[in-house]
Image (tube, rainbow, N blue to C red; front, top):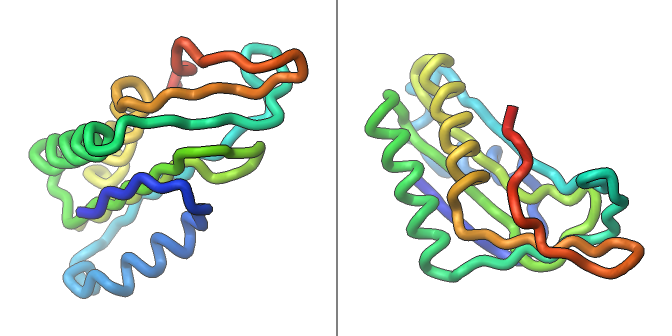
Length: 146
């Protein structure tokens, strides 16, 4: 399992490829990989968004993400999990989050990936400040995941 929260740019497809190549235990054992990539939208609640600042609580955030992934591994038969989340200033179309899950079977990979992402979105300690034409605002609630 790898959990990373960082300010540096995220190329999710390179992250997945590099991780798979480095994890030799996945070679031949993983019959399925479920990957979710979340990117910044340019519109929220009917308003144009030109940028967003994502803040987190270092240490606490990583601990929460590890707890989510461990709970998923306890519930589904997983081989490995990768979560990378951006913080700092982001712009529309920038990738924000990557969740990748490997399993022998697709059902476990799909369900665990969705569970991790939904828990992350609703419970992980991240705070968003959106830049609007008229100023900025803190996002008080997350958007529905469905």
